[in-house]
Image 1 (tube, rainbow, N blue to C red):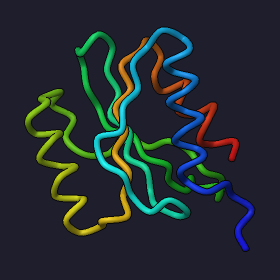
Image 2: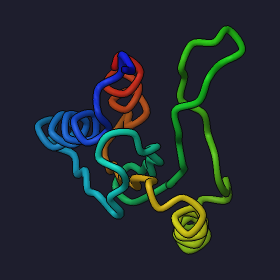
Image 3: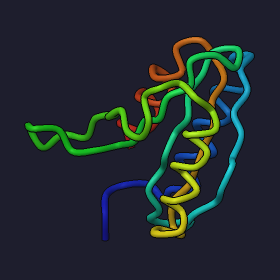
Image 4: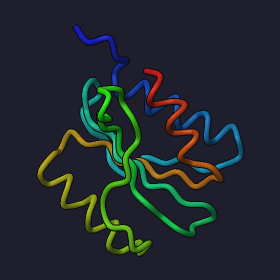
Length: 112
């Protein structure tokens, strides 16, 4: 048994924290409730979208890593996560629109 919380609980906590802080957090695609990976699309007031994902660091500890297209184009990001879902139907895709979205994601996802 893994020491991590099921993915659906981590996603729920992240969305609740962002929404309680006045931001908008939505699920674009649901993955496996217990062990799905989570791709986070962050932006602030719809601008500057980028993708983040939990990944192992060089020291073995989990960290958030930038992934996907870095051109800030919503269309290319949408195409990226849709291609990822074809290969990995267990992938969760979450969109966070709030200032310091990366901080909210790190504080929630890296602790559990």
